[in-house]
Length: 196
Length: 369
Image 1 (cartoon, rainbow over the protein chains, first blue to last red):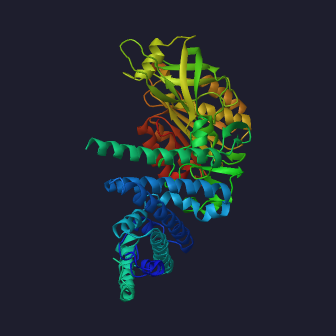
Image 2 (tube, chains in turn red, yellow):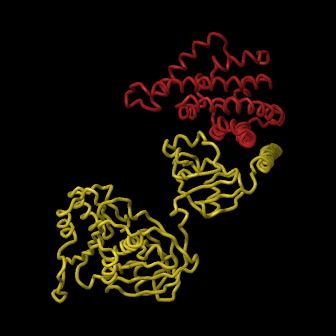
């Protein structure tokens, strides 16, 4: 993987290897916060932001501390802790210095501390042995991919409000079906580039 | 192997410790908003350390807003009115607030953080619920099984309540009973009288608290109660007020009548009081007084089973019969019904009210009665 250009990785993680539609990570907040485009955008941006930063931090922690000490098996617990602490710190920082940013983005941060997409990206980056730069691009790309997916979903769900849906499919039912169809549509991108 | 364990522990501790340190420092510099003033209902003001949510700030001041979800913004019970200093509405509040609440400046106190001086309004009853220590000033029998208990407040020495509300009296351990129990009793005194309250307590066979009051409590003793609570109170309206009570259900009605007298409310009032025999009737003098002071008020005691020596001239039979006979003669379109008594009596009366067109939303009763 060392040879892969960060930009290729960036676009690949948005389209062909979409963290949500290909790996189905981060589903809980995807399903619950995709009712309005505005909130979906806020959450998506927050995910992108946190993904990029935690990918960078976890890269350093893993390759500089855990691997040299041969305690890679601690990665799950260490990644979760760093993600939680980072999110907490960012939240405090934004809340203090930018009210508008906090209103649009900050309040979603506690929600995504436990988002599996965030942990997933850190774990993928380790398994695939990305370099630091690749990891950051991969994190940002995955975040944007997630943002793209939730925005599309919110757009569709906003329009669904006016449509007749069979009563049994209201809520999560129809949302999961739409997610499935969207995932199939994203397979169309997979001819461009494959990352594994 | 041992070295491995050692390194593992060290690394985890090191990383955790470092992150914790960063967060503590960040908290100190970033999340501290200094002293803020919370002004509650324009009368009470408290100094607090800013930075935490309004809900937990109030909790630390022993003011408890209801919250079922533990501050995660999902139940919506902790709503309160923030008139100043609340900052912009947060997206996490929006799903739980409707438009009229937003226009009334209602906020979700578990989401909103105290960052500056803030003015809030919370329902008086929440703000007001306290534990009171009182002294028994008077304990006198009203009938063979009902006693009037007057509690003079010691600490705090004033109480503010809405007529119709109740308090929870706490019994002390006594002969053979080791536990303390709390039982609810409606306040029977006027809400304008703030330094003492009257309770009307009927001896319930085997009742832990009522036995304590009737057999063990003496004048001069100390007693504790919490309150005031409950939303049984006089509602706005123009129509006639029909009160129905039996036994110690008299208590909230007395308080309501004091209120009606004090406020010079001009609505017609009919009060049916049910008892079995003459010796179960009490407060007849007080009712006489009220009839003099409130010309449009009528007190109608009804005995279901008067004894011959009672020489009873008034209404006879179950209270439901008296009620039905009366409802036949009036227009019930705006009638409001206030009930307090045994559940059986309340259910029977509600049925009759409904038959005569008094809808559920105009029937008020105390659920514990």
